[in-house]
Image 1 (cartoon, rainbow, N blue to C red):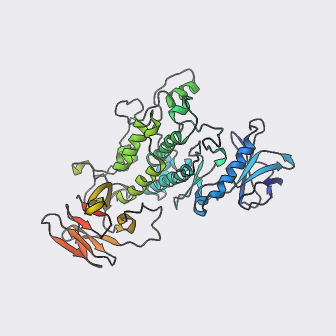
Image 2: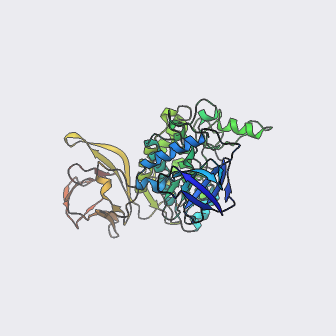
Length: 468
């Protein structure tokens, strides 16, 4: 065993840790040791690579960690102490809590390729798991940016994921950037780095990290890097070729004006060795993708904020439909006309049979007026209505496990009509599509979800309009 002496213990870490003699892993910056008690990870920087100011930087970063809430500490693996010596020899390093593996795995083991995703599907997981994982990624970055911090290396190698709960933990936070306060020492991982960083035009900041976040989110839900170069620029120099492809020639694979990086099997169902298109995503996610990958490629200010990704990914959970053939959940393409164009992106099965009702959510404004939120509800048989959907002051929560539903959908097999059942005490009022009659719905009552129906759930609440 080896002994590590610590200081700047901001979270009650012991002053002395016993670690195993040999490092368990080696990275570009240093060596990783596990504590004997299994609770901590110690990172010791390579002496010939560490900069003189690194120790002061680590002290400042650990100090920032004292401002985390208990919830934030669960998904941000922040340094909790600084290393003074290893076996009596002065060293530069830091300590973090150890993430249990299992159940956690590195994100790359979940989204590294289409083949990895297919194996996950075969083990019983669905695309909806990936949607929730992507939302967890966005949450970690939202909190960081909200505190004025930038990770500077949002790589799928720096995220741990619990595949069952979809919880996400971001680690390797010892290189944080805080503008005008802390300057990091890394630019990021090739393939994730923003164009302006590759060109040496700026240093990592929130705008450049918005690019990295978009790449990581799309990699997680599409199983590919949407900027992957597919042509060779310099056949004689691989490193230079990569710098060109990820730098000045960076091109979104589905840019309508530039097809050079477009996969040959784009849009073919995944089960047929195809590649998923961003066009399978909800309208809100499609718009964010275009802002991040087309408008924002060369104009960083146009890239979506992390908070916007959380909102769109959360809303997408209310737009899922289960395929009758492969049983995967996918965004129901209610925006496609005619109906025959709608199919499962995973197996190609066209939607048929008992189709879901679709409604648009409207936000209350002054004097009884409402405006469209561009959020939709895909209401299949058994679908549940939760309070956050109607509350104009709430966003979709990270979990609804502890929330009781206030309504649910039942399909009447006789007339092939879906009905929304009221499960709460508040009386609802609806103007039905077709004849325009007005009905009231008390607890236990139901109303038909006919196209054109408008449902009023009460004062200051959102309303829905059924489109189909």
